[in-house]
Amino acid sequence: MLIQMTRRETLLSLAAAPLVRGAGLKPRLRPALCAYSFRNDLQQGKLKYEDLIRIAAEQELDGVDLTVYWFPNTEDSFLMPLKRAAYKAGIEIYSISVRTELTKPAGATREAALVDLKKWVDVAAKLGAGHIRVFGGAIPKTSTEEEAAGWVAETLGPAGEYAGQHGIILGLENHGGVTDRAETIVKIVKKVNSPWVGINLDTANFKTKIYEQIEMIAPHAVNVQVKAMVRDENGPAPSDWDRVAKMLVENQYRGYLALEYEEKAPALEATPALLRKLREVCARHS
Image 1 (cartoon, rainbow, N blue to C red):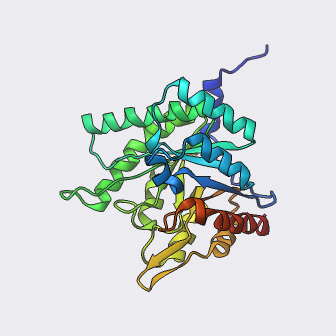
Image 2 (image 1 turned 180 degrees about the vertical axis):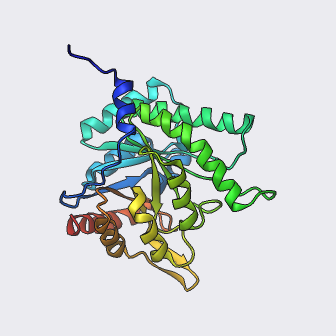
């Protein structure tokens, strides 16, 4: 007798299996754009999210990571035209980026954070995005890093289970606070132990031993954001995208490298050259 599995049962069965990182496949790095690069234009209403889709298409990119901070709402009246615009332009909305504060002990505040994150999983599912960037959060003054990291893992466990039911991966970003050190963020992800929870690697958020820490994270990366510059104890320097790409390829990463532009020059003026360089790096290592 033929037994048919429901979509939820299929996704749960996949969640029980190890995450395949592309072993044996040809390396493939895909150039993309983070909406945060145009934060000033979005805040001021000079650009809409549909404009970012157009820019990505004009710059011959593959996808966009939509920072949700300036979404006017999360109704279908906004989301569905945006999804259609991306499809028509041949651009994948592969990720959304949200704010989260997961360093909360068990209780009402943690539950509220979990409810909010689940809401964004629903939004990502509607847009067809397979990834959500999340933050760990600050370490409370009355807590230790170890305790706060444990709380993050405890929250990401059920969040990852819910995300997995929708086929969506949560990427915990190295973004200061409890995720300031690569060692800690790797411990969090290993403690969660879910194929639906990995690391959203931001190549410029470490302030010491940048490339050593990136190398530690690379095996767990599920999405990558690159910046124009890095800043460590030796001062600012151009980010070495080729070095990062080589680390990723060596760890069988196949996926997006998204430009997250944060320098002072206007994004509309500065990003075309950076995106051209990003396309070249992706092609060189694919």
